[in-house]
Image (tube, rainbow, N blue to C red; front, top):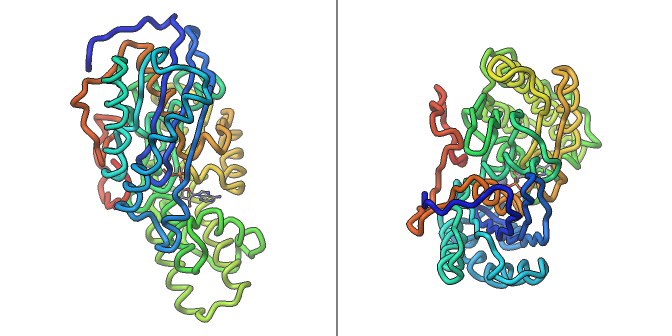
Length: 368
Ligand code: KG4
Ligand code: ZN
């Protein structure tokens, strides 16, 4: 950390850069001295088209695509915000966890801007940015309970303060979005698979296949999704060739199992939260999976049972974006935290530095 301290009562203007996966994003936010925030620009360019024919994200293609568009995106974000580089209080980039080629592109660009414009650099943990987003969207006070479910992460985390996170649960194998994507691929649905599975599930029978409800009733708040995925694969092999009705019923039954498991895991997570920090006033959902309407409904029930309020940022701020990186940068700058020019890009980066890796952990994509 560099020791360039800023006072928290000064408004901050921060540029944020996100390149950890398959979205290239740049944004400018303003943070007031009272801790409230405003988005001045937020530009996201998805690489879905580049990766679609491969059925998933190809790291090398992702890194090259970030290089192609990032300069222009940063420029557009600054112009749309109507500010000059000289006005920036700092520049933040996601320094991980994520696909290392992409992370290098974003972090190096931020370092160049910071150096040339003599402004502080903040190397942001992408997971911290998801965790702090509800403080931008609705000025949520600490502590709160976060359910983060995306293509690379599935965690329940107590958000205690900036830089202070306690992991309450995590997946032992696949991330939740990854499980949706893999099921979609098995069913030959388009990439990214989550929204396709949700769409097919809407017309299907969730009771036709009795898929396992992973981890149900366990005292810890961890997830496991690979067994469920295998059960779907076995059913597909048994039924092939599949009719449209089979695909719908498989999607609906898979989604129902995910919902039951998620509700159970989160109710344990909220109980663990209450034991450590008192009843959670808010349950926050973030990550692409939080866009799933059925999952939102399940979370609503879990939150209500725990007498907690469900907070879900707007979909564009649940999925990867630059505003969340800029905001996390601003929250750090307000506390006088910034990084040196040798800040390293990181493929893996724990949110809670002291977390033990759970027994049976075998996650391939998550950055823990
Ligand atoms: O947060 P995100 O945009 O990117 C990262 O992975 O960081 O999340 C993308 C993931 C993908 O796996 C996608 O299939 C899943 O979120 N997803 C969904 C839905 N929309 C996106 N999963 C289930 N239902 C959805 N409606
Ligand atoms: Zn993300």
